[in-house]
Image (cartoon, rainbow, N blue to C red; front, side, top):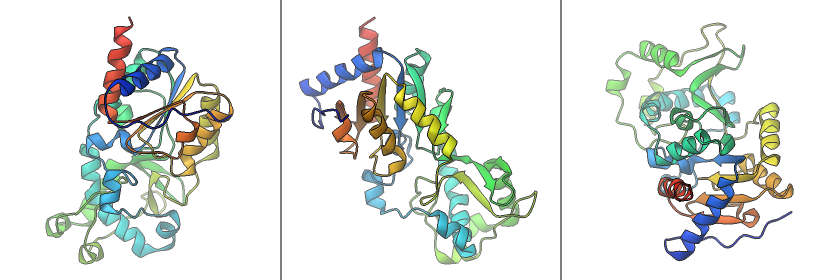
Length: 294
């Protein structure tokens, strides 16, 4: 079942207020499932791949096939990520993350599915978040499956590369997965470390492009979606199937879909409500609207 969207609206005024009130109607009924994307974290200084910041950087994400198939590619990734991780680790939750956590605290949210790997939704106080694409604060061994904290890898890489950070040129733009742009000479001088348990290849515990999400995680998201009172998409273009399939699944099961994003999305045709607006300000206004009804 495809719902009829009211048409994407950008800006402020009467129409925006009407859409916000309709969003509040959906949310106030409870059992909301939130599907969040990179657009929710851009106000925390973390760029996205397909929004305004992504278009400016023309970011090229690492693929699973490239990472696993080339030692040189892994050296490039870990050298760049070693510096870029500083930027991700220093990021703090913004008003949008805090608003979602507050909605959950009020008992209006049945579940949160995030496509983000930055951990900011959890840092804002939300529990039970399904990390669809994993998290950058963990590292996994591709041989033995051992998972370790990113802080431990950071310590080991510093020890294996004494003085490298001081010698390396200042990194350029940082991609959403913490991959900072570096010159070839700096990459070539970087030493990669392997798994402490078995000597296998280490990978960030995230889903790279071209890699499949674990089936049990996908099933859990489908179950959440079809049982929801509403699916609210926050800051995702829904360009990739990984997130879009849940919007399509919700529509097929008659679950109302609302989308708040900067710019049009692949899921707009399935949405009952769309808002082209900043996430932090919109979600803060949503809380205010709900408070006014008490």
